[in-house]
Length: 263
Length: 315
Image (cartoon, rainbow over all chains, first blue to last red; front, side, top):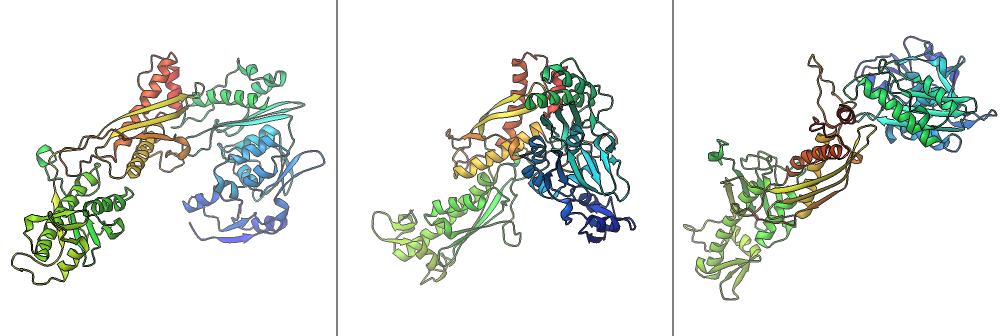
């Protein structure tokens, strides 16, 4: 690891200011950034910690009934505090990594990083969440732009994520045997206006919505509604843990299981 | 051992040093890095001399203190180094008899050693092991031409054959037909390791070996790409078996056929678990697929990851 300066912001305004200088880098839970720095693959001159900004930490429900989670809220806190309001989301958070990861990693950090195998992008996209930053609100449909790529501008901070609460939802993760990230993870959420299906881990462009499954499930929310569908393997990741065809197959299997578990 | 093809003597060595107070240090050529030598070797010494295990210290790993040995590998530590220890203890007892004969004014041939006591056969005249040890270092009127003071002996033991443990391993698996994921439901090991010095240590060795073997069978894989670049250079991609990958094991060693050619009657046990488990796991998977009607699958290369099992099921 190279030397760096460390700034601990107390307010969002402080953090935005600190991030405007040089090649300063925001630090959430550091679950990706710190290992990257240790391997000397990243060398920011300044880290700006977002973990001591009270207005960015915690879980609440707003007047519209949405679950609002501060950007610097850890997975462990979401698992605990969102359970009563949005059980499927809390369950997803409770299975990210291991306890050490869940006690450090944050929802804002995960969404800003947009790892193609991360769990939270599936929840945000599958719930049609709104990603609130210091500058604007971004709909999840406009936010995820590809592997490790998002709509965030340089120095822009995720301050809160707002999740509309569905009638039914479930997340099914089939883990990669070594890292236990999602080899394929599918988030299914049924709203009054229709069903959303978001898939993580599988595609080379990162999280995506499976439109055909959404249409079929909106008409009939049952695992059998997916029987005739198939996901093409073209855009799937292929590596030593699974071929593109295997991942495409798992997308359907995990979607059916999520529907069965949610129904 | 050289005649059997190893081309060197595969001996090991032990030095037994008895102090004036009767405590014992054993310097061993074999090294313990988790196998439990400190426990089991001390047991062997304590049993043979009829003294407390707490009086025995096993010294290993420091080349400035230990005799030259061949080391710990090949499930050999107790069978070879333990036998060297046993031989050195024979020498200690033989010398103890000479000292006892002198102290008890009896012929050396009339001295019996039993339960930590040297006695004149058929009488109640006896000296404890501690008294003999003390006398060895504080000798009185020793016939120095034939009886040196001190009580310390070294033995090198070169086995004249391998040991032949035998076992049977039984594995039951379930396969998720949608994903190819293999779950081990039960795992039973029955081994004949000859005489078992410490059942708990032996069971632990089998547990560790089976875990390693299941890891090899199901998850562990060193993979390179076509340019020779290692793809599994971290635990993000190299899968180590973890506790939740493994079942509880049933381990049995009730069948005891002592080894016929070493003094302890023991056989190697360290590698058995790792040797028996991979074929048991793979055979169970193939058997399960056959029972599900997939007779075409006769072989899947290890590790049997979900992706590989699923691919085999599609063919």
